[in-house]
Length: 174
Image (cartoon, rainbow, N blue to C red):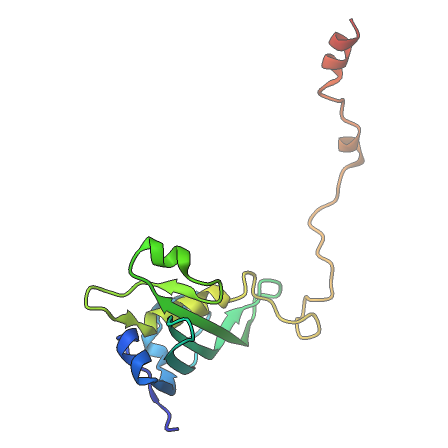
């Protein structure tokens, strides 16, 4: 299969009835929100996408997206590259009833006013959710990874403060 650019938007019902499959890329320039969250630009996103209808008659978009992100390690404050991979399986829904009846294997998506799904935005959303919450090198790769960080010392005088509830104890005993 030839590697092509993934379409920006897609009619999921028409694509599913045709059984379309895509192997391609989403150029890094199309992922503005993802690039804003990174320390550097992300690489092109490699996407494989399959459109179809399952045995229950549910239209689905199933696929995988992989990219390499440059993030800032929160321990040593240096940049590092990490690969982010997401697997997704979506089904277009028109109303709340369809969403409630959708099996757990599918995530609901909404179509726009002309019945299409914005694929680039959908893939970018999935990659943003899959990013590490606190980006860090592995302990072995990080210059500060194996060191315990101590900020100040605890004054032993602060440990022996009077109990603020001692007054209530006196009232209880009366």
